[in-house]
Length: 253
Image (cartoon, rainbow, N blue to C red; front, side, top):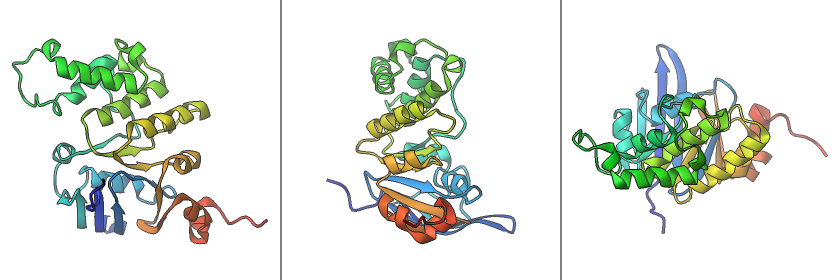
């Protein structure tokens, strides 16, 4: 049974760089367990909004709440430990470590090891098992000992998703998860994301409308730093304001 407290809530969030307003009063509420896509034209402020939610940027005004707790003003690692994890448009991997070693690094904190420098990594059975479980889920078990830098682009993106879910965060932010992929790679990534975000709350920024309409329970459209519509995929598709601003002019039968 889902909690009535939203997994993520933004209240009148604003962000300015100098005199330039980038985010202009965003209101957003994402229930627990929802898959929510944020779409909009280039320059709409999507990446800035992600950076505000994950703590990379501080808000100029407004409030961001994770499971009812204020997170605006907190550092990214503090927000992560409260249960929010994000991926980036550009892969953020340890390229000289293997797939397994990358995932083991990601699970250590959630498995309770924190800053315990006296543990030998090889002896951490639960961290090893957790890393191997995630590796299976993302389909990279056969690449266990391959350095991350030697993986194909699609495999690197899958590993990035694996790192995002490895720490047991309940709110997952994915930034352009299928960017640069072929159609078949993108279809595989959608199936992977659907599988690994079961029972979690997902917020994603994505340009590929096939991915958006294939994954999202709800879509918010960001234009010039403001949400102009937030609704089900079908209603977003039919919304004339959205069609004019982003999806293209409505077609007439």
